[in-house]
Image (cartoon, rainbow, N blue to C red):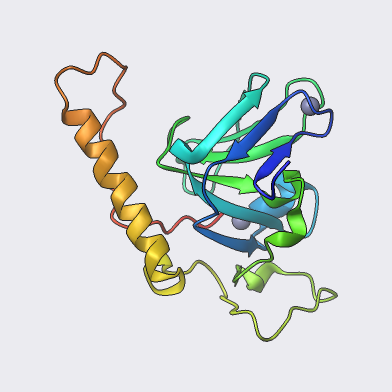
Length: 183
Ligand SMILES: [Zn+2]
Ligand SMILES: [Zn+2]
């Protein structure tokens, strides 16, 4: 067990992150409240390439979004616990993983609070942690090394798409200049 191991509520789905998160934020948007049944979603962002399943088969459930884009919540078919969100594709560049599924969630406090405009008034936030009324510009808020990691992952994926020897199914190319997801 490391701070980067985690599992669903019943333990059937277990995973390991092979790198520390790119960033950790708390999203107080109404979608995250609905999806989690709580006041906010506590998400870490990690390259999909660094999320490794140790056991179990993830179950994908498509949920609506305000933007109309595809969005999956992914978790355990047995206990129904959601472990991560996948935006746009089932295999996106970056997934949004629920920090509470880690074995050591206290290691990863939020470094920003977003969509605080829909935060309940009873929840008091640490004023030392940046707050945003809505979404943020990840390129300004994430540490420079995380932005660099994101760009590297994007370049690696683009190179993989161009590789003629690849027989893997290639998803439709999508332009994504910056990681500016809001959930
Ligand atoms: Zn489970
Ligand atoms: Zn949200």
